[in-house]
Image (cartoon, rainbow, N blue to C red; front, side, top):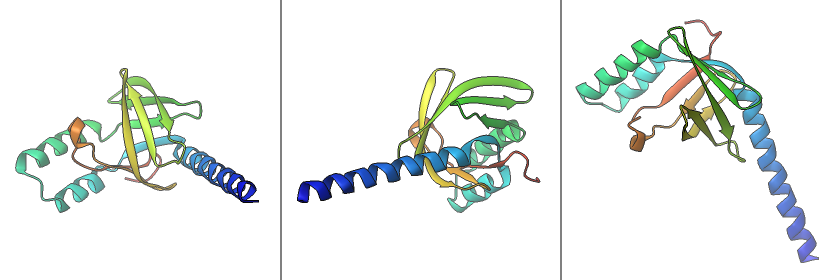
Length: 142
C-alpha cells in the first residue's frame, strides 16, 4: 500500500511540474520589450555606482525599442534597431528558469515573475548583468 501511495504522489508531482512548465510557456509566448523605466527604477533601489548606472542607462538607450519574440516552437527572434537576431529559448520543467540561446551562447535565466503583463528575470552577476531585466508585452503602452 505504501508503494502505491508513493507512486501516486510521484505522479502527482510530475504532472504538477508539467503543468507549471506548460502554463509558463503559454504565458511567455509572444512579443515582449524591455520596460526601461522599471529596469532603471529597480536598479536605483540597489544604489549602484555611477559607472553601473551609466552602463545600464546606455544599454537601455540601445535596447529601448528591442522586441523579443518568443515563438511556440522554441525559436526566439530579437529585433533591435531594425537588426534581427535569431536564437532559441527553453523553459525548465518547473517553469522557474529559462535558457536563452543567442549567438550560440546558452544563458540560464531565473524567472522572478511571469504574468501576462510582466516578465522579470534575475540578475546574472557572473555574466555581467547585475540588474533585473523587466519586460512587458510589446503591445503595452509606453
